[in-house]
Length: 458
Image 1 (spheres, rainbow, N blue to C red):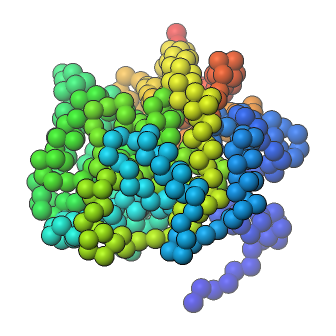
Image 2 (tube, rainbow, N blue to C red):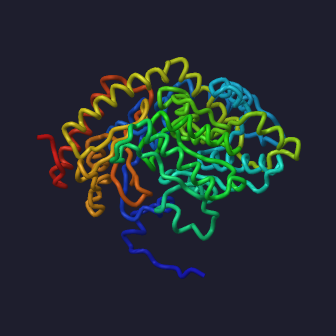
């Protein structure tokens, strides 16, 4: 039994109960949000330069989406999927399937990214059992990577900082290195490096025993764990080839990179590497309601149906109010936001590379569309990391926040080392707003340079 502890008086009055996990940091109370901006109750305005945690793809307070949700609220806010079908879920599934690679038209809705990736893994396992391949249960993942915070999703997440505490409680899965080819110092071309990283998957499959391996899960464009890492183009088709060779399912985690953010509907659409199963969330609902999805083919689903159905579910799966998020996809089309993400992403990439010339401790700028990241080091030649004690990432985020800009950052070496920042504004961002974002980042980097004695152009 846990012993109760009486908190310090100032802590007890200062921290509301739902923020018990914050030891000291407090943020201002939000008042309203519109477009790419968020206002606080004390009158400050912030640019949402990361779309929250890469969620608000179509921006805040879109009137058409709010009106669609209000209309649905007036009809029904909940209908349990085992009792009723509902029109919003059917319409959204049909529209979503039309935007996915051909054949990925069996949709299962959930409420978030962790649920989506776990659903993908559970579908894969049930398919294996239903097809007489019960020996297959291992899901190979990359290190570092992030696929969710629940125990099942965490088991396929390559992040020591998040997973270590819970390792005894879950079946930790095998890993292969994430394709950080830009760091390699060898005589290989980027194309050759891409193949080499993909071949590490084959080596792992053989080491684990091919008949024990069920699937390989990866983010086509990296999320927070790798700061928008993109592999060399040669990596992706080789991965597909290896999975086919050993009868292994390829799962694309598009929770962060999907729903148009990279300048195509899926991050994987940039590459010749069609997945067997896709996980979506974040931008799919764009923050208007908790929403995620699994997409697979009838070829995978049919054996499950024949053996008793998909043994999985959540109370809010296919919730009609959340699925009124069909209006989110409608706004993406009406405003041509995927094209805007591609164009503004090219502009933002060029501007960030310009900052890297001014501040050479920015060793790499990467990503696709409006999912961009930059990695910071103490020594750009040797790629020596900034001392963890300096807390460079958090300090940069704080400096930007003080100047009215929200950006994102996390340690990129398993959650325990490596500094980066990510820039991922809503897909409605304009050229002028990109300029404002970059100017604030530049000012913040200038201050950071002086505080931490980092190298500058010169």
